Amino acid sequence: MPRHPAIEEKTGVTRTVAPVFSLWRVYFVLTLLFLPSSVPAVELEEILALAAGGAPELALGTLGEAQPDAAKHPEQWMRWERERVRMLVDAAEWPRLAGRLEHLPQGLPTEFVRWAGAWRARALLEMGNGEGARRVLRRLLWSGSGVDRPQVAEWRRLVMQSYLVDGRADDAHAALLRYRQDYGDDPAAAVIAARVLLARDRPAAARALLGAATVGEAGALNLLAELRTGGEPAKVAVTARARLKPSLLSTTRRLLFGVLAEAALAGGDGSGRIRALEGLLPGLTSGSADARLLGIDPDSLWDAYLAQARAIGNEKRLLVGDDAAWLDAAGQLAPEVRRAVLALLFLEGAAARESALSALTESLSALEGGIELVRGLFLESVRFPRLDRVPPPVRRHLLGPAIGAGDLKLASRLMQGLSEPPPGTDQMQWQLNRARVFILAGEPAAGTTLLAKMTEGEGALPAEAFDRIVQVVFDLQAIEEHEQALMLLDGLRSRAPDRQRARELLYWMAESFKAQGEPRRAARHYLESAILPGAGAMDPWAQTARYEAATQLAAAGLVSDARRLYSRLLEAADDPARRAVLRRELEKLWRVEAENGPGE
Image: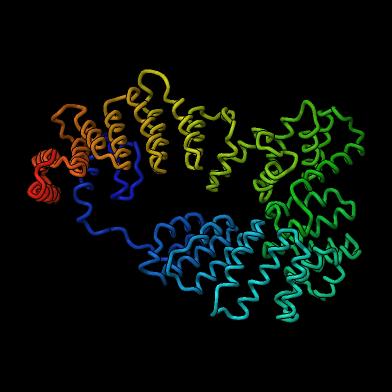
């Protein structure tokens, strides 16, 4: 089957070296601009249905492709953007939301800009960046007239939260006092005021403020205040468990899990503390206001594991170093206690460290939010201050989810130093994946180095291997790293498994030269691709490459050469639409020749 390069500039088709009919390339090049679009417009309601149907990432991607132009249709663009924000909030994609709202199109109404700014501040707060949120909020508070009183009050409440996120309880309290001077005992600020009081170790005042609150965030804070004023841990825990419903907002769920964890610690319930922490940590951002209020981070769970495992060891008279006995005992324990024993064996064991680690990560990953839990335990713990201290099996375990979530920065970090693939993984595909992640994560030099090593040697590469390498080179071209792409493509020329692939390499080299604004070199490589089988070649691939060569010759001022190529294409063309396009190109060149002469 013939092969050809797809035309992403003209059709939006992702280019590939997979086999497709070359004739379509010629047809698209010569006629697409004269055909009406057959692709129906995507309605916003269709995209929202995708999100509601369980595919929010697909919905966000489709929205990004189909969103109206902000300059031409600002009202429609803002409507779509509000839905984008809602989807990102629902998915708790705070970094993506903050990045998206950092740079808005020019000319949008002030009201929308302020709305977007407030959401960006909330996203930064969720990320634990109080100072960044305050910078946004200061601009909003100083943004001039037309801001109503409730809006200003909301922004000032967010400022209070930003101080709590940064652990500046005294500044939060000062901001609260100023707020009360202007707004009195505003019910909307009661929850924040309770947080401020708890952060300043005044739980009795927080209870007095919250009164009989039993629902939502206020109810959860009231339970925390009750516990910290001497409430019976077991009784508080029973109430918290009764309120812990799946339908609760994430903040309330986090706080209730935090109450359970604190109550278990106070009541000496080691397994209960582990269960609570395992439920809390997947939704807890390190450094966030909730993390500071509860005094919990991933090391809290490591500590809970070790404390519970040692208690089990004392109870069963297990000896340090007798890993087999510990493993036998773990098999008879509840799941969370078994994980505690596995954690102890991994951190302090002897012969069973690797097997304990494997069993621990497998058990954790089976929990709801388990991948987040593993990520927090190993990437946000003081026990692993550097990434090279994280065991390679864990890094490989986290790699797939990171790539799947589009977190290429994390994926790139995880891959640093992982030269060997996981057991049972194809070595070449592993290295190609590493190269692709490095390239797309903003480290093209690292990706290029890997690819260059894979292309070393002499003789033709197997066709499948050749195609897979070229696909990753396309990633370099996609991010405009054409120098590195050209180096790799040139190195692959001597290793092309057949003539058609050699033609493709010449064509892709021409694409990079064109992107670099070098029309002469681009034209030469396009033409070499066309005539590789022979100077008179006029197969569909040759016609496509000749057409591109002609456009580049014209751009370089070599008008007579361009005219010759267009004329030969006209002689070979049968389709009336293609012939019409070629005649138009020739007419343009004749006018140029008439004005400037035939060129060089």
